[in-house]
Image (tube, rainbow, N blue to C red; front, top):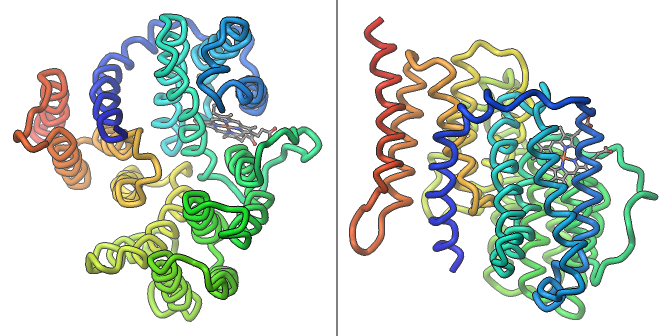
Length: 385
Ligand code: HEC
């Protein structure tokens, strides 16, 4: 189910992204541009209004709820079209997410308006995932005061997810920890697994704090009821945090060199070491996010984009949204004549082939093929110059 959706999405997204460059330049600039924070708060308010309907298809479908749902979805779509055109959101780290969010919100509103409510609800719920692709790039604490956060959540887990979404990472971390501790009494297996992964991401990527990682996950292991496979993963995470803490590798280097070193380390892990590898990719993505929006020589930015695409693909957090492909495209367009651009093209081609391969062989839609060809010729023509 999920992979089918993701394929459909990938296909439609690739199609959409072919034409989005043109569309953007035709659109007139938003009048009265508000600040990034202002736009974000509008999204937040709309999603908050939608929350009660998203948790049940019945409520989502009810005629009586048609107007408030439609109003919120339409408003988000309109805001995304008119107000995301801000410098900060065009930086290399954010651009891919921004475009995905725009298409996604417009598509969600259209699905609802067209009466395709099941799909619309599924889309609306997955909006969170896109919001997060930007927010994980930022610091540990949001400026939103806790007072503004509503208290209407069905469970601790839901509240923690909400805090994570709005990048209140500190509050989210503490609540996820409570969720983890209360397994199996008040937490089910699925919530446990998500909460563990969220806190791993927060501590390894956002906080970059191996000591906290060792300490917290060691404490978690004391719960004898933990399912054995999860226990094994946690032990592997602790092992990697320990090595990181003891500076057994990639130490005392500038961020760019450190990133290169971590990338090489992650790539060298054997397939049975995926848990340790995840810690390295999380740490690496944190370093990349920090640097990506700075003014680096373009070849360095391209390398960061290439590595980030790899992190994104391996961490599988954004399964539904092929952000890694967006990063690769950005890498190519940035300066097609470099050797990094060539490597990015190679990755892009591989990723697309894989995503359109099935038991019946590889079947890449013509539009996607044509798009790939365009990127290839970009590289080839710039080489000749
Ligand atoms: C393209 C990147 C991007 C996407 C996508 C994105 N955000 Fe944000 N968001 C930001 C940035 C950047 C900030 C920090 C702004 C600042 O502090 O100046 C932020 C901050 C926020 C804040 C805190 C605002 C405050 O008052 O401090 C909220 C709430 C928020 N976003 C909600 C959302 C929601 C909900 C979504 C999804 C519908 C979303 N964001 C999607 C980039 C993004």
